[in-house]
Length: 589
Image (cartoon, rainbow, N blue to C red; front, side, top):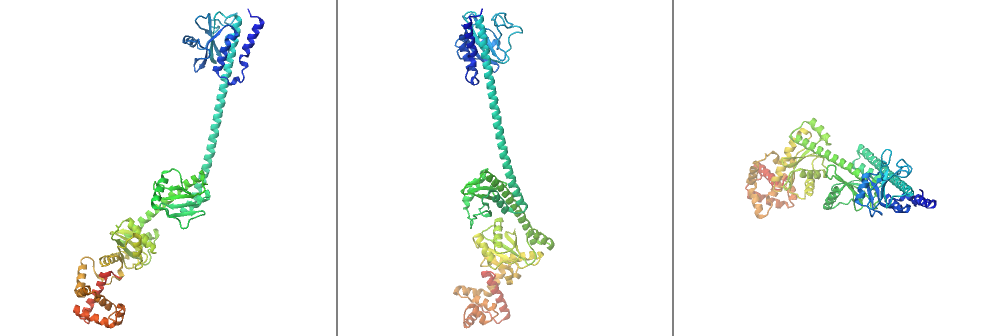
């Protein structure tokens, strides 16, 4: 029997407006909807909401709202139903039922196939076809009555369950839509980020392509370091400088070039190179962005952008980094060429000193940039406090080229050997090398001129002879020309020096002893007398003495030596002895 019309309509209205009256229902979550539904169970009759469950994964989880009387035993019965509508047993309650909250289908209709007079009873499962399947299940609502509910209460309860399931379904749909919207937004943002990165990468690649093409064109034209810094200046708009590892300027492009270019402190320079080489990117050092050129891990040079105002952006930094790589390759190439040329030059000098045919010697010299045609001199250099190594050879080569000599250098027989296109000045090479090495304790021998390559071995032997004479003289430091050796040119090396010294002692010994004892210059007077062909006037002028003084000295020479200067053989032996004495005293002039 239906309840009175007014009461029935009131209950039905309250049930129908239970969820449709929510403000912003899309914002409600399942727990809140279930809580409100449980709170309204008693409003539609005399029943009580025992517990509410929401689907989590593949199972149902009890919500804490208003389910104070729910027990683990009840939870077990609900899990056993697995989302189907069905009866549950509750203490001191005559009727208990678990309603599955699913969409779009709801629980059994009051006029459905279960019973002809109302909703599904606890006496048996819904028929036909067995219990309702849990597809679209959102949760479950457990309701109990102290007494068996009437038809009107079951009708309103069914409507409440349907409305609750619909609200849960709408909330789930809203959450899905929001999740989809968030996923779409995330995908959109990710796509936009990828697009921005791609655009940035394309811009970077375009710039690097521009830098690479410009540097490649510069390399193709053979512009070297100058081309690299000019390209960097043109791309960045900032003055650029290339330096070697010691801080010497190799090339500059742009305004503001310092004059003179500052020379850094060696210790600070090394520290700067170590610190910069450890960084993967160019670093700022005061008003400059600096990158090292180290193609094989060895710093060969430095490339800088002058940027006192900090205008260099990321693109300028990348351009500097790329240009530094090109500079490293260029410097490494130049070093390899220099090493190859040095080796070829040394091999050529070795062959020239040993004897090489003219045709091949001319061709090989031309290949290393040296013109072997015309007069050449062999120069041999030894320094008492310097080993004959590559460092010494480089110092000798720098000093020689600094005096204007064009040379082919090599190391041989514990000495530096130069095949020079012309003879050095009488004192210029020794002075230049003394400044280079910081000491003048060295000897240089210069061979006579040779006009063809096959004469080089002869000039080499002459240079060795001149070097030996210089080193055995009283003034062992200096430079000796073979052409100035005089009688020493016909004397062999080795033990003959003792015989020569004995010869000098035999003819000049008394005079040298007298000079040493009385601080006179009788031997020098005799040497000047023979050099001037016995001319009294020229000899007196050379000695800055009066003619009468010269006659007196010559008379004393006759008395002390016991030699008659008018005797032809005696005059010859004395003249040879004075020549040798002069060489022994100070080296050939």
